[in-house]
Image 1 (spheres, rainbow, N blue to C red):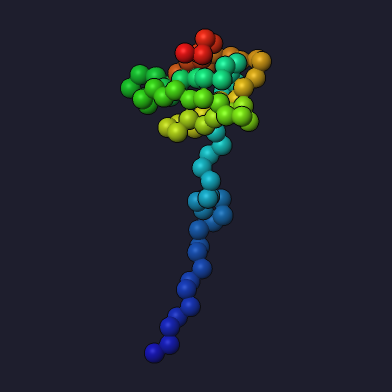
Image 2: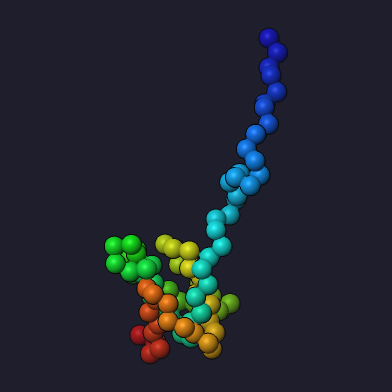
Length: 86
């Protein structure tokens, strides 16, 4: 008995899953060390302390936030900057 060829997917390209997730939320920071707890409260995640790499950025392992070193930072909910290096 001959095998049938696989049927191509009929999922429209606009709804097909993409290999990468959503674009990260960019959070500008002025410190090389930040802490992130998501949006805080019950909707957040455990607070994690992150060090920006040599490229001046780091991604939070829990949420879609990318912290980017800049001279113009703005306070974002659930983000704590350490200006003292502790």
